[in-house]
Length: 112
Length: 115
Picture 1 (cartoon, chains in turn yellow, orange):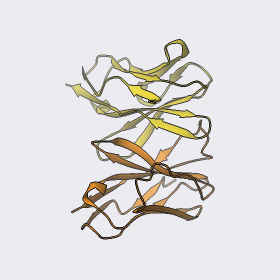
Picture 2: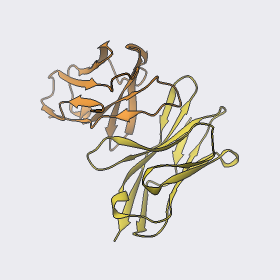
Picture 3: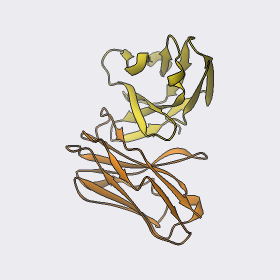
Picture 4: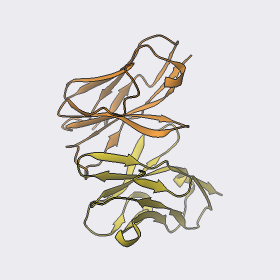
């Protein structure tokens, strides 16, 4: 069973407009949730993570995400896209027992 | 901190040859992960170690793949014999304790091409 679903394989926004990258998870337990970013030819870098503290999590580069248990979602947002935000974004769910699940990724294109 | 170090950064080899990928985790981190990334299958967890012991190798594709962690500062992923379908970017990552709440820190990856 799929534990994490990234609903959009590709998102395209204009520079200066809001970004929304969607992530839904399925878990019977309290998960930890992460967003990682991968720039071309680079390794993955942590943007932010949720580990059962505040449901609204702020990360680097102006990104934030809100954990909504009722919707089993952890969508990533940014008020204003920058050209440097163009990258691949991965939502990750980790469960007790060291189970790690990566989403299939969302490619973000920023149009000048 | 130098971060996670992987070598080589690029490897081109011929089918049937042995390939060894190397990883040095961040000092003090007790968990190490090997991933493979391809366009077709995305990012896949191959194996991870905690305190140098393999915990879960269910992601290792087949017997041609093997991984070792002889000490806390070094790990290898070996493919023998290599096949063209093994062509991918292989990432190593480390985390402090391997807990579900821990951040994983990724290396730059090794791009493997098997001809």
